[in-house]
Length: 116
Length: 118
Image (tube, rainbow over all chains, first blue to last red; front, top):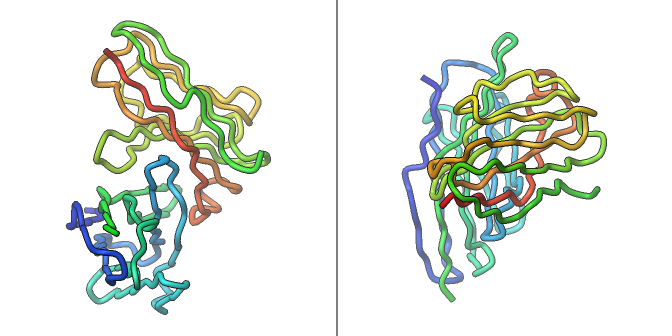
């Protein structure tokens, strides 16, 4: 079964705390792509990062970092020194390209609340 | 345009009315997707266009839902005889390449059209 699980429905932290959003995926494909998108209250889904299955290198972009672990099928997202503007729903997604098939599988999202 | 534009942003319809939701993708983008997002859920795929061709409509929930992209740019999602369960945000996304060859292409989303059916 192909699936993306974001077990944390909602997380609430105080500003400046670090917070990690979990994403666990399931697939038997060896080639796949993982994404994180942010959905602020305005509604637009905003792209944050893309990873392919052959690149396990972790990435840091400012206060954002991503930890891709194929051994545990996880692609977790950490925000360091969180800010109120980080408040949003964050989605993890998996793209599979098998033969002529294309599948984009979304997690249910994690609502992140950053309190001032 | 610079981004994906959707209109109207908000639509209230009485049950049984027809509605039309418009999506203006980024100029030159080959792929266009429609998604339905219920409150507190992730996006659910509705349909996919490669230019003007509707290559995948497997996610359309019923024959009341119809989408078109006649000239390969602007797309319209039409819902006939709306029902309360159609209430959701309808998201449009576009990407530069076709989804098979550019499958890992980043999708650029519009802000969505929030439909409320009373």
